[in-house]
Image 1: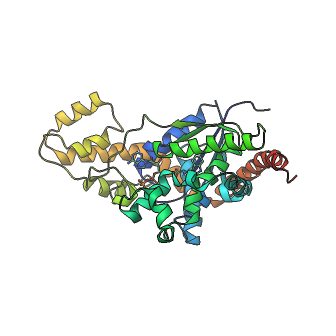
Image 2 (image 1 turned 135 degrees about the vertical axis):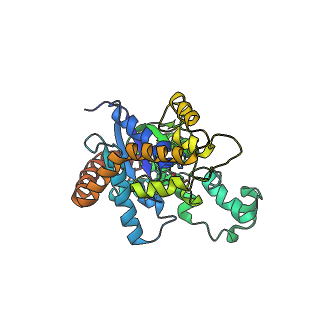
Image 3 (image 1 turned 60 degrees about the vertical axis):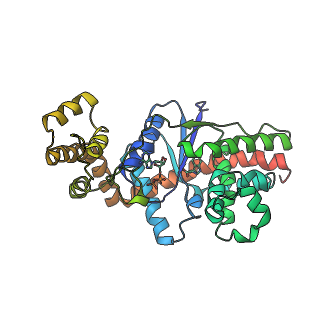
Length: 335
Ligand code: ADP
Ligand code: TRP
């Protein structure tokens, strides 16, 4: 029996990956799973993505790309159970069971739902609005409302103790804890373990080429698997502010690849010569990203590898989650 604490994390297959995703999330996950301290289950949260992505071809492509990306940046499929959420029916089954012990006002306090309601109501408090004008929430899917229950199932099925996520997901982990406690209390059992969030805090916000947070929605990204030319194009369009004598936007991205001391010397040497500094950044980026890009390209050429990885992940995740579901079904009296 493997007694290592279980680590679970899910990643939605939405958006082309950029270096902000890598330095802000992917790298930490790869490092955590490399330590050998945990038994990691990492999955593509395709059913979560269904709330916002309703194009079958896009779903298929992005799912594949995400799996290739994680392997390319260093996730080792031999050490990690890597799978698709939709391949493991226990996730949605358990979600339903959780739905039946959860009340609506509790879920209405979830941040993601409140944010959507706020968009529709221009800041009227979500709960007041909810009771008054439910019929106006037509853009908000039941799936979005229920999102935290599916996520609780994702986590609790595997007895996860550690759940690495960004700060924005903290509340979801608390909901998973509450739900585990509630189930255990309602059914007078110890079926579920209480998970802890592992917030990836030491992560700086990676700035985009316009100085704002790098984000696919701002069109200001440096692509993670871009060619040398793509990198060059992105870096050359970094907005340089000429007020100081250091191009801050270039410097802040450059900081990801070199120590401050080293960088300060370089920026002193090329003071005012933005072109030379950008060229150095292109070379640094390219050197850093080239091995990942090569691995990604190799996986693209060998689609069977991704298939095999997902097949093995599915087998393992199904076995573990099904064992848990047997306990659950017994506890609720359907088995
Ligand atoms: P985007 O902002 O491009 O839509 P997502 O919201 O899909 O990116 O983010 C996926 C993961 O990458 C999240 O964990 C998020 O915290 C991280 N991330 C995204 N952009 C950045 C950034 N500029 N700096 C640091 N982390 C980021
Ligand atoms: N909601 C998470 C996000 O948007 C993705 C996710 C789904 C997840 N299920 C999970 C993360 C379970 C950790 C554990 O980033």
